[in-house]
Image (cartoon, rainbow, N blue to C red; front, side, top):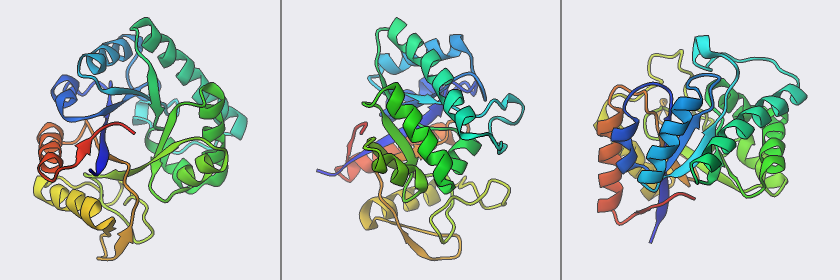
Length: 246
């Protein structure tokens, strides 16, 4: 049976985390820099434990004003420290809740820079491995994040998106572009089915781009997040796909 993960970014103050939990298998929890705080981390971790959802860290640049979506040119040692500090914080809270940290998925600009910049990807991979070599690093399918994690023996999960459009090179359309977000649920479902059945995604220019899909992301702050998540979950179940964290 084909297996795949459904992940969602959570603990960001959107207010729909509890509604999304039944339809996902892993949660990426904000670590306090782009959103959230220790209270929201604990709250979200406890909800994930109730629903048997894998708990992940969602570290970011220290950029609360722009929700972590502004690129920052930090030295590798600064990126390493940024990652470590956030992992230490969330891991402590997870353990206080009698849970276990399962994965790490960088957020926003940090995620995008890791996908396209080998040095940042390498630094993030080393930070995750040094913190806990058993953690899974979530990264954009086919990107530097996946390549650099593999190069140091860190397990990585190739991520695809239900609610974002793609460029011809397999990268995500920048949020600055009008067509970056998919807000029509039917279009998202078509994209998910194409990814699962054909192992490819159609770019905004109509090119078929090969992808590896270990985990499908649905953004919790999307306008139709709960409805989309429910439909993706149902659609995969109907297609005899087992939904489980990597």
